[in-house]
Each structure stands twice: as structure tokens, then as C-alpha cells.
Length: 195
Image (cartoon, rainbow, N blue to C red; front, side):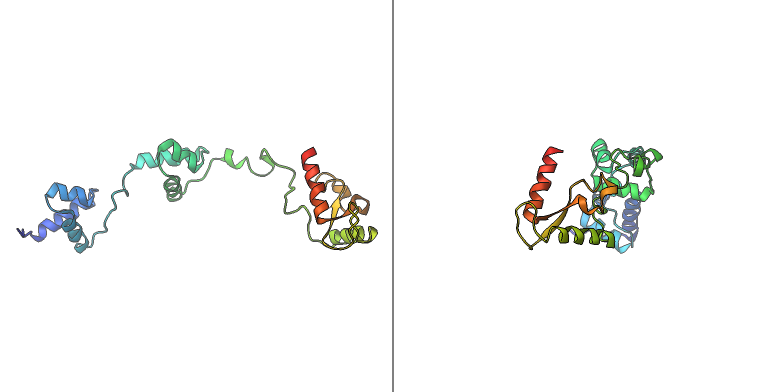
């Protein structure tokens, strides 16, 4: 049986949806199918609110953001609140939340793993001084691996005293030795096992 509804009925459905009820909740309350309610709301020009959009109260979201501000990671906040980490990240972003000072104090020189600015990127810079040191080591050793005796090929200039620890010896040709790539890998493996 086809029921006729007045325009006021469709406006009432849109009004109820704007109060925070989902289309299914409006349909249940009015005794009309969800599909009909959905069509009416769209005709009224009202943005359809997805059921999960207001699943969490503003207080709950604010508490999650505060956990983040108290230096918990988004993953830890998600575990603590039972919400997905992407959801927490969205809340944090929308709130414009920043971390407290104590977190930023763990960066740079105050970080537990600070090594005086030494990074893998700065290990062997491609500068003129390094290239000269490398060429001097190769020429002195006559482009021959000092471990296995292979001549030419893929050669590496190896620092005998570590580049990171002995800054004053970085460009000293006496701190270098020519090794082929396989021998260089063996020497580096041995050093890592010993250290």
C-alpha cells in the first residue's frame, strides 16, 4: 500500500537527522523505511551524516588529544582508548595539537642516542679532500687489494681507524688501505662482530 506523506513529514525527517540521529534512527522513529528517509533528506539538501561521524563525544575526543599532548604516540592513544590510530591522528590534526616541551627536549643533543652529529649520511662525504685521500690510498697500493692481491676491479679505500671515532685521521693516507669489495665486506663484518 502506497502511503502519501506531506512535505512537512520530509522536513521533519531532515530536522531529526540534523539533531544527530542517523537515517536508520529517524526511520525507526517515524516508522518509514530508511531508503525513503534518505531520499527525503537528500531532496532537502541536507548533508547525510554517516553513522560513525558522531560516534565519540567531544569530551572523549578531547581526552584522546590530551593523551597525545601528554607525549603518548597516536598508536598508544589508540590502544588506550580502543580507537584506530588513524582516527586519533585525525582528531589530533583537527585539534591542532602539539606536544609538550618535554617531548621536543628528546630531540637533537638531548636525545638518548645522540652521537655528536654523526650520521650515516655524513660518513663519507663526496668532497675534494675525501676524493684526494681515496686516490692517494689507491695509488700508494698500486690499485691492488692488500688482502687477496687482486688488481683493479671494484676497489674500496678502507679506513683502518674508524671514520667516526678518529676525526683527525680521516684524511691521513696512512689510515687507509685498498681492498676489493668482497674483502672489504669481510673486514667490515669482522669489525662488527668484534665491536
